[in-house]
Structures are given as C-alpha cells and as structure tokens.
Image (cartoon, rainbow, N blue to C red; front, side, top):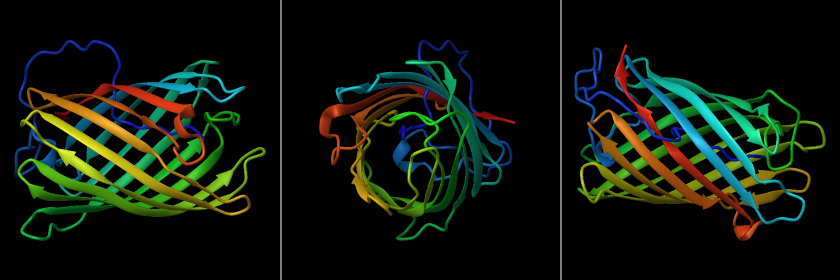
Length: 256
C-alpha cells in the first residue's frame, strides 16, 4: 500500500505577488504554520500538487515515481473538504487511489493554544492492486489531528484515528488503529520544520504494525504560497530503511 502525503507541487513555480483573498473569513490567515487553524478560511481554495519518489531496496520491489494533484476548500471557517488523485509514471503509468476528505475544526482550548479537529478520509482504488503501490484496498479512516502550542516557536502535533482497510485481490482486510506524535518548530515566521512518527496497527489475519517516520521543511512565500519537502521512512518496523519516500511541492491559497 503506497503511503501518500498530499499538499505538494513539483518543479519550479512562477507566480505574481498578491495578497490572499479570504472570502468572508473574519480573520487573516496566519503566515506561520504554528498559528494556523486546522481548517482553511471560509471560501478559500487551496490547489495542491506533489512529486512523490519512492525508493526500495527490497528484492523484487520497483521504485515509484508519481505525481498527485488535488485541492482543499474552506466551506466555512470550521469546515474544509477536498480531494486528490495520484498518477504514476514508473514502473508503469496508471491512475492511483482517489482520496476525499472532510474536516471539522473543534473549539480551541487552553487559552486558544490547543487546536483540534475531526476528519474523515476515504481512499478509493481506481486501478489493479500493485505491491507497495496503488489499488491495494478501499480505506476509510476517521481521525482527530491536534496541535498544541507550547511556545511562540514550538508546538506538539499528533492525532488518533481508527478505520478499516478493505483489501482487494490478494490483500486481506484489516481494522485500523492509528497513533501519531511529533513536534513542530517555527524558527522564523515563514519557515516551519516538523518531525512526526506514528504507530499504525493493522488488526486482522496476519496483523501487523507500521511505524512511519517523516521530516518536513516548509517555507511560505508572500503569505499564500507554501513550498515544502518531506523525507522519511514509510515503515521502520517491518521494512526499516528499505522503503524511503521523498516528496517535493507546494500549495497555493486564493479566494473564490
């Protein structure tokens, strides 16, 4: 099953400087990642894209090169919805798993330092199953991402989730339990660095536990364009350093 991280556009991006339009939102969208709400502002569109490189040292496994395009939309200041679709170029050209999500931001607590949300994500396979690639299963996951601001430059991040993995072809079915945790550092208003790992249980016949580990660097240009890169390991528990993922890209916000 291919792990995907949305939000990224590969290559060089040429844009005209502009101030992001936030529709009917009552507050400006923060530049610093540490101060941002969980949901996009009302009537704000965020087109996204990514270049995803997956490298394997496992015998018989192919390296993957794919792109992902998608968008998120702030329906209200608390509700966000979006979708994305990947397309691989190597080892073969094929459509990936269509991903759709909805998110509702909850009230803030601890003097506004604790941000949390409820999110539902569905992944729908559009191609035949491929080991370490697309099409392995229909997946539905309900989770609660959180961010707790400890200092002007530091925050704890994480989340809890559960769902199911309905395997296709020769892939089994699983009940999913996810626990993620990590930290976010904001050295400057534009630059954010995060480190996050998880414990992802897949419960069923031949149960297994995946341990993803990822480092992200993000830089915000002109307040409405984020460019970033991810580097990490999809599953340290079973594959160790045998599955490395590298992602580059950007997300751009504009009013609708």
